[in-house]
Structure formats: C-alpha cells, structure tokens
Length: 234
Image (spheres, one colour):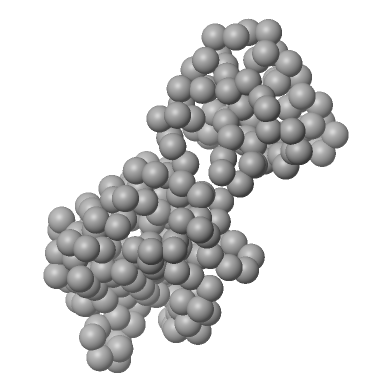
C-alpha cells in the first residue's frame, strides 16, 4: 500500500493519466477550476465526476463553469447528488476504455485545487474496484446540465455571501451577539474549535432552520431553502 502526502496532482493525476484513459471520481466537493486544470493537461481523457455533497449547495460560479465544461468536452460528465444521504467519499478510479485495468485511490482529498494542492491531505492506492459505488452514485445523481437540476440544487452566490460577511464585520454589536450565540452553542454541544488546532479554517458554519425569514441581511445570509448560516471568526 502506497501513501501519498505531497504532490498529489503530479503523483496521482499526471502519473495515472499517462497510463489510463478514463477517470471516475466520487468526491464530497469539487471545483470547476480544478477540473479545467486537469483538462488543460489532458483534454482527450474521459472524466466522470460525482459531487456527493451537492445538496448543501453549489456555488453559482462553479455550476455555470461545470455546465460549460460539459458542453466543451463531450468526454466529461459532471453529476450532482440529488437524492439520499449526502456522500462524503473521496475516491478516484483510473481505467482504460475496455475497463480491463484499473487503479483506485482513496483518501481525504476532494477533487479541487484545495484538496490536491493546498491542504495537507493523504491518498492511498488500493487494489479494489469502485464499480459498485459508481453504480449507486449514478442512481442518486443528476447531470449538472439537466434542465431541471436547479429544482434539486441551490446555487450559492459567493459574492453576495462575502459582501454580507463584510457588513457583519463592520457592525460590532451584532457581531458580538452572534459570537456569543456560537460560543454558547459550542459549549453546550462540546465543540472545540480554535485557530491553533483547526488549521486554516476561519469560520464555523451553523445551519439553522427557522420560521421567520425577515432578518437583517448584514447578520445572516439566506439560501433558497431558507437555511441560514452564521459565521464567526475562530
């Protein structure tokens, strides 16, 4: 068993695509910029990507870029999971067109630049097949280009979100109230986060379902599903 901690893109993507023609991916999260990066290096390879945590929302920018990628590259298929319990698996299976030879990697890295190039992650090559999981994932997923996809997936306007967070930071009184709520929530539920032991993560997101949707936009960001997320510096 080989473990990969560094240079994941070079040691896994580049090395494997020298030998295989098809990449099947199940990933909790993924980024369009990373898919484009791979396709710039390997434009003639086939990629089938399943994003397992898509029911939590896809950024508007990524969604439209995913759709553009699928239209530009007929050999690329990108699916959002739209049913069942969210999937947090990170697995990459390389194979050739006749499906005779395979190489499977599993580990912690999402199919994104952050996962493969920025965070400290681990991936390992295993002698197994992803075939069963791929069939399961196909049944509960929908193509990002499906005309009805936005009935199942919420798009997150990242620019709107970041703007609201900046306004919240300027309003110190509201910020202190929200920080206090998060502190009490963490204490009650025995959650311990801080910058020392939480890496580069700067915010803790708490999804809260509420009835009253009339709130100041500077203190919360509203998703289409009426889920709200409070963010606080750790």
